[in-house]
Image (cartoon, rainbow over all chains, first blue to last red; front, side):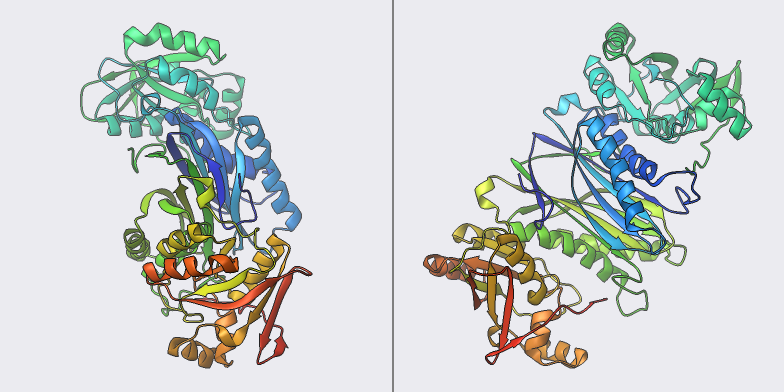
Amino acid sequence: MRGIGDDASVVKALKLCVTSVDAVVEGVHFRLDGETSFADIGWRALAGALSDIAAMGGQTGEAYIALGIPSHVSEQQALELMLGAEDLAEQTGTSIAGGDVVSAPALFVSVTVVGWAERDQKLIGRDAARPGDLVGVTGTLGCRPDRPMPKLREARAIAPAGVHAMIDLSDGIATDALHLARASGVALKIDLDKLPTDERTQATARELGVPAWQAAATAGEDYELCVCVPPRRLERVNQACQRVGAPIAWVGRVIDGEPGVILRHQGQRQQLSGYEHRW
Amino acid sequence: MRGIGDDASVVKALKLCVTSVDAVVEGVHFRLDGETSFADIGWRALAGALSDIAAMGGQTGEAYIALGIPSHVSEQQALELMLGAEDLAEQTGTSIAGGDVVSAPALFVSVTVVGWAERDQKLIGRDAARPGDLVGVTGTLGCRPDRPMPKLREARAIAPAGVHAMIDLSDGIATDALHLARASGVALKIDLDKLPTDERTQATARELGVPAWQAAATAGEDYELCVCVPPRRLERVNQACQRVGAPIAWVGRVIDGEPGVILRHQGQRQQLSGYEHRW
């Protein structure tokens, strides 16, 4: 339709518009110390907003990026950042359709993703988990990859298989499951020994100086999905996961009670919250 | 549909999605010196993005606001900023449907407005001005109000009356007409003596230490509309303006030639560009 260069961009819409905003700021969410490349900053800023669209079961559409550029960031570095975002956009079928570039005292990237859905029934909130539901998580937790991949395809496969509630793990399941529990007015019992881990989780755990199960529960920015599913839909959800090649582990159960999360490790109750995860 | 509190917001869409992003930063676009209230900062940040939707002839829809809050801005001040934006949102039929709040070393406000249109034919770009078109501007220029009002209603009335090209005056007509001229591949001849001014323009002119016609051409953030209209549609456009109570002044003509803007004051050619307009 109309692209960058006019007053506003114009694209064809589907029936429902699913929108998310995610802003990251130098010194708060990341440092420019050379450890994180500008391309990775662009990738991760877009990934955060895309993961919220995934968590609803929406399909991606257009991304709009507002960039605040300080004098210590060169044009070339800003371009690298945009190329990193463009890389993820291509891999997820997202169009970067507009934005704004302004001067700023510190680098910031504010991403708005406008996603789409054909029917409201296909969208899954975080507010409809019910006592008796099983709690599942996709993939492997605590990996902290440089370029986390939002689970758009996986979510759209799993959502219509009978999921009651869904959230993406951006701050670690200890924190995100609490958001879901509060929104649904239920308690989630999670068995930390069942969280899916691998050697990358071990590496994160060593870095943080904690056991692997703890890294899996708290390291954040996994962008894996946490779903609540009634037992009668378990088989359909397992099959949907298999179809898209997404492993799913069943790690707990939704119960009646004070809204909150009950975390257990080897039978002992644990209190955990997410690490502040600067990149 | 679904509001703030879930992973993403969900709203019903019209056929076409018209989106604009506008970011403003403390120390670049405004100062926190007490002259501009936080409510006005919120209003003006939203106004900038809404004016871009107006300039296409789109109808407003949802606004998403990413807010970067430094330690020298209190929660109360941040709230005042959002109330200022909410004030304009209400007056224009816009819903503030989501956003993000992050820490930042300086205050920034990044606004994405998702607007809508039912048909592509109702949308007006800046790229279709043709030689022979008359150049019109709405309202009064150079007023610099604390709370500029985007011309959403006016634009939607004028656009279908036969406008070839339209742009909003955010940097002053000397600069914005150039954007339109370049996008359309034409030259715009503008008679500065015909620019609509009043006593508010005089006040701005005194502040800037320039004649009123120069303030009208360069003071920026008018958010008035500049339109290019074939002469046979002049009457219809005049009537549309009358219907919505928007005065329109005919200030120039589109001609063949090197893309650019030819500004004349009392027959003399002038070179002008916009003032840097911090709030």
